[in-house]
Length: 74
Image (cartoon, rainbow, N blue to C red; front, side, top):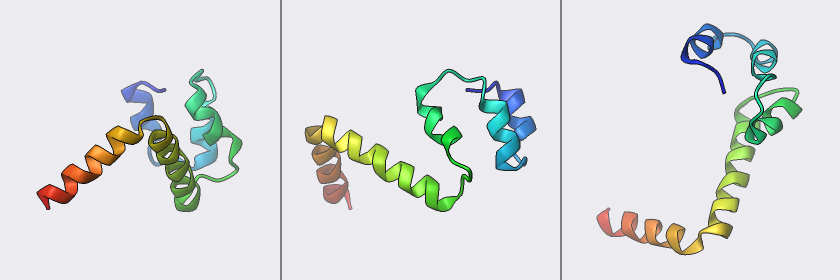
């Protein structure tokens, strides 16, 4: 990812400039971000939904347990 200093220096920059700063990263999870022309609420929501689906597929028992605990504590 980025150092704290680099991240702080880029936090208010437009997506294109941030994309260039992150381009040196070797983390696979960032590849999807770089493939987008825009990074906005819709693309973030879509990525979040896909990540949550992967989590539910890989750890269904843990997801169900977490849902049950949150329902019981409400």
